[in-house]
Length: 91
Image 1 (cartoon, one colour):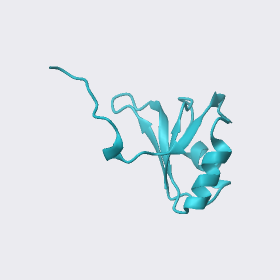
Image 2 (cartoon, one colour):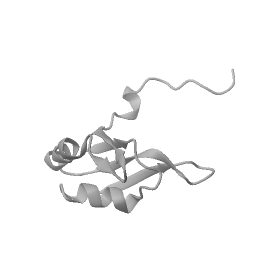
Image 3 (cartoon, helix red, strand yellow):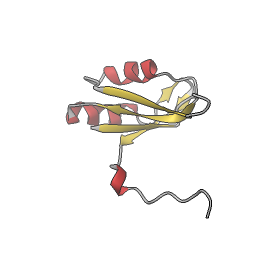
Image 4 (cartoon, one colour):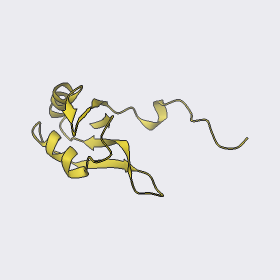
């Protein structure tokens, strides 16, 4: 299961996320989203957990908890196709 983690501190690292989620089970991948120009965290990321029951436990256990001084949001990530199209740029 791919898990969205939001409202992260800009100081939170991939290792911090891995450590928080590892107590709930096996972690396949951690992907902290960073600005492509500055390299600074954008304040959200994704954690991939292969076992859905462990992922559900992590979501229930970590949502609305404190990590690095911030109350994080944790839920199942929506597939890319299910999101509304982004607007922006020049017309």
